[in-house]
Image 1: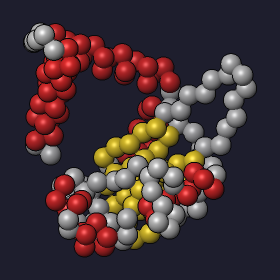
Image 2: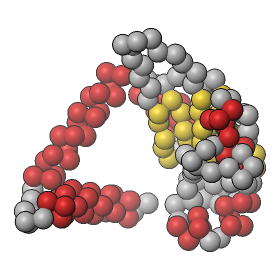
Image 3: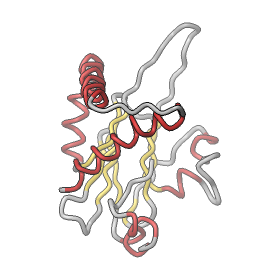
Image 4: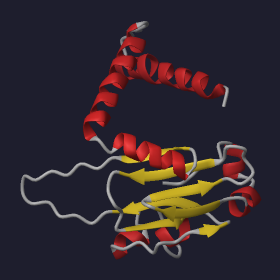
Amino acid sequence: MEFSFHHIMIDNQNFQMSLYCAGSSYEDGIIEEDLFYEEKGYQYLTANFTPDGYDCVREKFLGVYGTEDHPAGLERGTLEGSTELGGNHCGSLQKNFKLQSGEEARFVIMLGEGNREEGRRILVKYSDLKRVDAVYTDLAAYWKQKYAALQIQTPNEGMNTPINTWTLYQSEINVMFEGC
Protein backbone atom coordinates (compact mmCIF):
# COMPACT_ATOMS: atom_id res chain seq x y z
CA MET A 1 0.00 0.00 0.00
CA GLU A 2 1.06 3.59 -0.52
CA PHE A 3 0.93 6.03 2.35
CA SER A 4 -0.84 9.37 1.90
CA PHE A 5 -0.08 12.91 3.02
CA HIS A 6 -3.81 13.48 3.61
CA HIS A 7 -3.85 16.29 1.07
CA ILE A 8 -4.37 15.29 -2.54
CA MET A 9 -2.54 18.37 -3.82
CA ILE A 10 0.57 17.42 -1.84
CA ASP A 11 0.30 13.75 -2.81
CA ASN A 12 -0.02 14.49 -6.52
CA GLN A 13 1.82 17.75 -7.13
CA ASN A 14 4.09 18.91 -4.34
CA PHE A 15 6.82 16.31 -4.71
CA GLN A 16 9.30 18.12 -2.47
CA MET A 17 6.94 17.23 0.37
CA SER A 18 6.39 13.63 -0.67
CA LEU A 19 10.02 12.98 -1.63
CA TYR A 20 11.83 14.84 1.15
CA CYS A 21 9.51 15.21 4.11
CA ALA A 22 8.71 11.66 5.13
CA GLY A 23 10.50 8.64 6.46
CA SER A 24 9.67 4.99 6.88
CA SER A 25 10.89 2.43 9.38
CA TYR A 26 10.17 -1.13 10.47
CA GLU A 27 10.23 -2.66 13.93
CA ASP A 28 8.45 -5.58 15.59
CA GLY A 29 6.23 -6.32 12.59
CA ILE A 30 5.07 -2.72 12.24
CA ILE A 31 5.87 -0.34 9.40
CA GLU A 32 5.68 3.29 10.50
CA GLU A 33 5.69 6.27 8.19
CA ASP A 34 6.58 9.63 9.68
CA LEU A 35 5.12 12.63 7.82
CA PHE A 36 7.55 15.01 9.48
CA TYR A 37 5.70 18.26 8.83
CA GLU A 38 2.32 17.14 10.22
CA GLU A 39 1.63 17.55 13.93
CA LYS A 40 0.23 14.02 14.31
CA GLY A 41 1.79 12.78 11.11
CA TYR A 42 2.25 9.08 11.56
CA GLN A 43 0.70 6.09 9.82
CA TYR A 44 1.29 2.41 10.42
CA LEU A 45 0.81 -0.94 8.75
CA THR A 46 0.88 -4.22 10.66
CA ALA A 47 -0.67 -7.67 10.59
CA ASN A 48 -1.61 -10.52 12.91
CA PHE A 49 1.36 -12.57 11.69
CA THR A 50 5.11 -12.28 12.05
CA PRO A 51 6.29 -11.02 8.66
CA ASP A 52 8.89 -12.99 6.70
CA GLY A 53 9.88 -9.80 4.90
CA TYR A 54 8.94 -6.18 4.35
CA ASP A 55 9.62 -3.17 2.17
CA CYS A 56 8.94 0.47 2.98
CA VAL A 57 10.46 1.97 -0.17
CA ARG A 58 8.18 1.93 -3.20
CA GLU A 59 11.00 1.59 -5.75
CA LYS A 60 12.44 -1.43 -3.91
CA PHE A 61 9.07 -3.14 -3.81
CA LEU A 62 8.13 -2.37 -7.43
CA GLY A 63 11.64 -2.70 -8.88
CA VAL A 64 13.33 -0.58 -11.54
CA TYR A 65 10.61 0.57 -13.94
CA GLY A 66 8.25 -1.77 -12.10
CA THR A 67 4.52 -1.31 -11.86
CA GLU A 68 1.79 -2.24 -9.44
CA ASP A 69 0.71 -4.93 -11.95
CA HIS A 70 4.01 -6.81 -11.65
CA PRO A 71 5.90 -5.71 -8.55
CA ALA A 72 9.42 -7.07 -8.42
CA GLY A 73 9.06 -8.02 -4.75
CA LEU A 74 6.26 -10.44 -5.58
CA GLU A 75 7.98 -11.81 -8.66
CA ARG A 76 11.20 -12.42 -6.67
CA GLY A 77 9.25 -13.94 -3.81
CA THR A 78 11.27 -11.92 -1.31
CA LEU A 79 11.18 -8.38 -0.04
CA GLU A 80 14.37 -6.41 0.58
CA GLY A 81 13.76 -4.94 4.02
CA SER A 82 14.02 -1.38 2.71
CA THR A 83 13.45 1.78 4.76
CA GLU A 84 14.61 5.36 4.22
CA LEU A 85 14.23 9.00 5.05
CA GLY A 86 12.80 10.82 2.05
CA GLY A 87 11.70 9.09 -1.11
CA ASN A 88 8.51 7.32 -2.10
CA HIS A 89 7.16 5.14 0.66
CA CYS A 90 4.95 2.11 0.72
CA GLY A 91 3.96 -0.55 3.17
CA SER A 92 4.44 -4.18 2.19
CA LEU A 93 4.54 -7.14 4.54
CA GLN A 94 5.43 -10.63 3.34
CA LYS A 95 4.17 -13.89 4.84
CA ASN A 96 5.20 -17.23 3.36
CA PHE A 97 2.70 -20.02 3.84
CA LYS A 98 1.45 -23.19 2.20
CA LEU A 99 -2.08 -24.52 2.31
CA GLN A 100 -3.04 -28.14 2.00
CA SER A 101 -6.17 -29.08 0.11
CA GLY A 102 -9.18 -27.88 2.12
CA GLU A 103 -7.01 -25.97 4.60
CA GLU A 104 -7.68 -22.30 5.36
CA ALA A 105 -5.56 -19.45 6.69
CA ARG A 106 -6.81 -16.10 7.85
CA PHE A 107 -4.72 -12.95 8.08
CA VAL A 108 -5.71 -9.56 9.43
CA ILE A 109 -3.95 -6.50 7.97
CA MET A 110 -4.19 -3.32 10.03
CA LEU A 111 -3.59 0.15 8.56
CA GLY A 112 -4.11 3.24 10.63
CA GLU A 113 -3.27 6.73 11.77
CA GLY A 114 -0.79 6.95 14.59
CA ASN A 115 2.76 6.09 15.50
CA ARG A 116 4.30 2.68 16.13
CA GLU A 117 2.91 2.60 19.69
CA GLU A 118 -0.60 3.02 18.31
CA GLY A 119 0.18 0.26 15.82
CA ARG A 120 1.21 -2.01 18.71
CA ARG A 121 -2.00 -1.22 20.59
CA ILE A 122 -4.15 -2.01 17.55
CA LEU A 123 -2.11 -5.14 16.79
CA VAL A 124 -2.76 -6.52 20.29
CA LYS A 125 -6.43 -5.56 20.13
CA TYR A 126 -7.17 -7.08 16.71
CA SER A 127 -4.93 -10.14 16.71
CA ASP A 128 -7.87 -11.95 18.33
CA LEU A 129 -10.00 -13.09 15.37
CA LYS A 130 -13.15 -13.25 17.54
CA ARG A 131 -12.73 -9.55 18.28
CA VAL A 132 -12.25 -8.84 14.56
CA ASP A 133 -15.45 -10.75 13.77
CA ALA A 134 -17.37 -8.86 16.46
CA VAL A 135 -16.20 -5.51 15.10
CA TYR A 136 -17.26 -6.46 11.56
CA THR A 137 -20.66 -7.56 12.85
CA ASP A 138 -21.09 -4.24 14.69
CA LEU A 139 -19.96 -2.31 11.61
CA ALA A 140 -22.42 -4.14 9.35
CA ALA A 141 -25.26 -3.40 11.80
CA TYR A 142 -24.25 0.28 11.94
CA TRP A 143 -24.36 0.66 8.15
CA LYS A 144 -27.56 -1.37 7.80
CA GLN A 145 -29.26 1.05 10.19
CA LYS A 146 -27.82 4.07 8.34
CA TYR A 147 -28.87 2.76 4.93
CA ALA A 148 -32.39 1.94 6.15
CA ALA A 149 -33.09 5.61 6.95
CA LEU A 150 -33.50 6.51 3.29
CA GLN A 151 -33.80 4.22 0.28
CA ILE A 152 -34.56 5.52 -3.19
CA GLN A 153 -35.86 3.19 -5.87
CA THR A 154 -35.53 4.07 -9.53
CA PRO A 155 -36.23 1.94 -12.59
CA ASN A 156 -32.45 1.68 -13.04
CA GLU A 157 -30.86 -0.74 -10.54
CA GLY A 158 -27.44 0.55 -11.58
CA MET A 159 -28.44 3.93 -10.19
CA ASN A 160 -30.02 2.60 -6.98
CA THR A 161 -26.79 1.18 -5.55
CA PRO A 162 -24.74 4.37 -5.84
CA ILE A 163 -27.60 6.50 -4.50
CA ASN A 164 -28.52 4.20 -1.62
CA THR A 165 -25.04 3.03 -0.66
CA TRP A 166 -22.05 4.97 -1.94
CA THR A 167 -23.50 8.49 -1.80
CA LEU A 168 -24.56 8.00 1.81
CA TYR A 169 -21.23 6.38 2.69
CA GLN A 170 -19.21 9.22 1.13
CA SER A 171 -21.33 11.83 2.90
CA GLU A 172 -20.89 10.11 6.26
CA ILE A 173 -17.13 9.68 5.86
CA ASN A 174 -16.68 13.31 4.77
CA VAL A 175 -18.47 14.49 7.90
CA MET A 176 -16.34 12.18 10.08
CA PHE A 177 -13.07 13.49 8.68
CA GLU A 178 -14.05 17.14 8.28
CA GLY A 179 -12.68 18.01 11.71
CA CYS A 180 -9.35 16.21 11.23
